[in-house]
Image 1 (cartoon, helix red, strand yellow):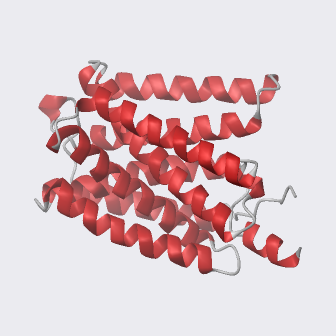
Image 2 (cartoon, one colour):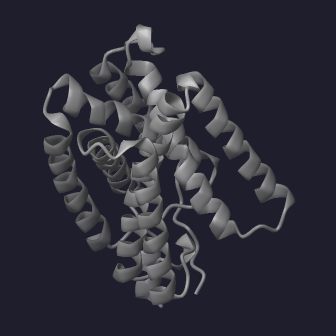
Length: 251
């Protein structure tokens, strides 16, 4: 039992601070991913390869860690969102799948990941992540959700024609609806968690695009490097101000 609790303690308690940092981290994933693939002109494939290596190293360190380390956890989250950004862009743009095709494919992969996790472990609740196998499912599912969120954000802002501000309002409104369902209904908390986790990614994606895309395209044309550094500083400040506790186990 002691070992199981030690493993679970690496997953933070889901609070308002968790969601604030998550949105900032997903926004950083967009600006950071674009900085490498576009500003540095490395392209989507090379950038995806670089971020995939970082993702693998971070997840390995996270799984091997004995206790919950907020900085390591959020570095791993940022790694999933940066690789998700460039991977979605590569699938949607370089492979010519398009936003609709990319979103559909990634949704299928996410659902398959959740299904395999559920039938293997018996639950997909984050409070039952009490073994390396469950934690591996957790991070693979998160990576798929981050990639799907990138495609959804681009699809809504570009193909659907809502623009960055309109898309941000849509995803913000959906997150508000999930909050209402959380406090005033008995809808499964696990379903609400993963729904919110997915929706925070397209919100971060469109906010990131709003910050660094050209004014002619509806953005502010800010430096991707400057925006990324500001987001890193914000996330660091949040971790200092809002002390995060490990989630409690449900065995």
